[in-house]
Image (cartoon, rainbow, N blue to C red; front, top):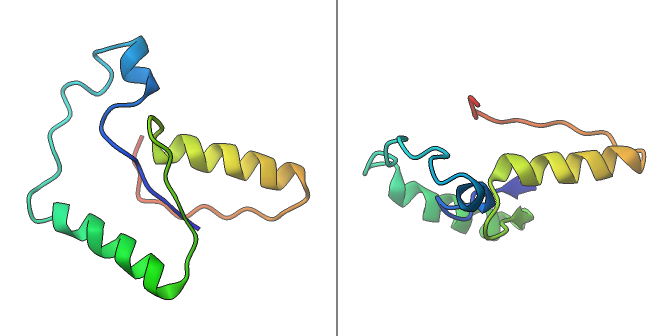
Length: 82
């Protein structure tokens, strides 16, 4: 599966408004690529997961924990740095 961030604001922003408040916006040349990768996952039949109010890493952790608890093998590939 491919897991996407749903938006810049998450439940953490509601708890702590300064959460990632000083992060710059993604570069303009990167923004169109978000739609392209969503289209590619659809075209290839790859499961995509996106939940409003949650970051991708939160979703990945939840799915990985549940899958591993059920005896599954989990491999996470990410370029996330935090």
